[in-house]
Length: 105
Image (cartoon, rainbow, N blue to C red; front, side, top):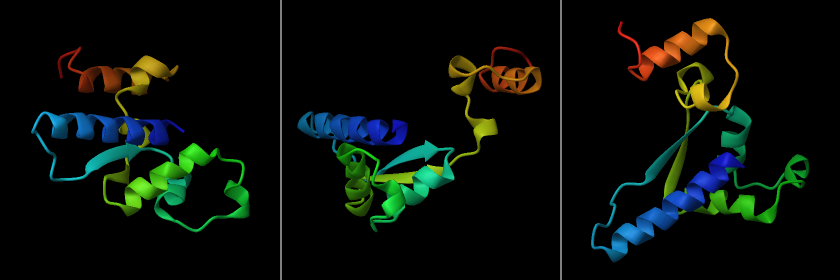
């Protein structure tokens, strides 16, 4: 659901930039740490297991097919934003804190 929301927001921003004569020629890359969600986004085939997903979520499939956005895997351990959104083990917390530049190497 987060990837779908991100995709729709990125398309909105792309359209706003186009109105301001700053058209983006490359597609927007969205990084996701959920391989199942990435598979659902890339595969346009409807599965019985995915019928519970809201219709608006399927919009991300269209955006991927239209080459507006691309979904790429990014490991959980590298997701710096997790420091703000999840409880973390101390080791990962300090690693992400270092990646943010909050502590010196």
